[in-house]
Image 1 (tube, helix red, strand yellow):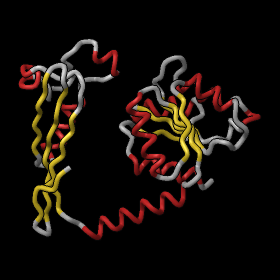
Image 2: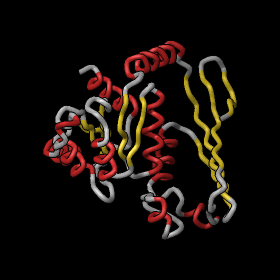
Image 3: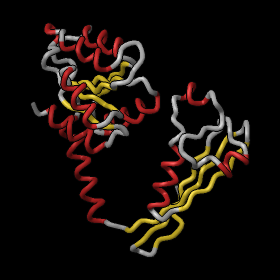
Image 4: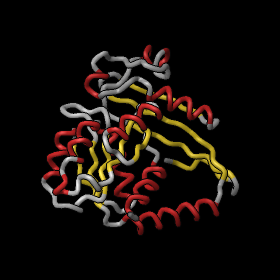
Length: 235
């Protein structure tokens, strides 16, 4: 990240992200890269569990923020994305945000959460948000593993469970039902919070029937995540 200019009230930043991945062809970059539901290689969706929406969302967000984005790529060598965004400086708001972040760390420091998620990227993002707030994170990659981990711990070991809904082996709904049956381990009391990309109505009904306490829509909003965990941590 580089600061391009600053006049005391406004600042222009340039962000540059480079990788050493499979790269993209010139034709794909020029005609399809920013179109929704497109991926250059047919096997990418299976291997990386993508939907082909990432770059179209990025382009839409940057356009709405009056920014610019450019891409350079070579097949077999990797890609480089560069985008520029302008911001208005707001010192008071920045100070308040920093104070709120420190308050959240104080509230949640030492809280232990079982994070259940089968997608590598989603797991990494959620783990970052949690550890940044001072929370201890233990991970499970499917519902069956989550049930086994929970069953092997004493009552009160976990403060809460963050449970993805769509997972292989055992989905989040069935895992939540199994955990609720573990009375000896406090399965009836442990807060179970769903993480789901389903619609609000579908989420509320299915999560409630499985005995879940709340749900968080994907993509996960860090402020909402911390707010919900703080609410159950105080109980």
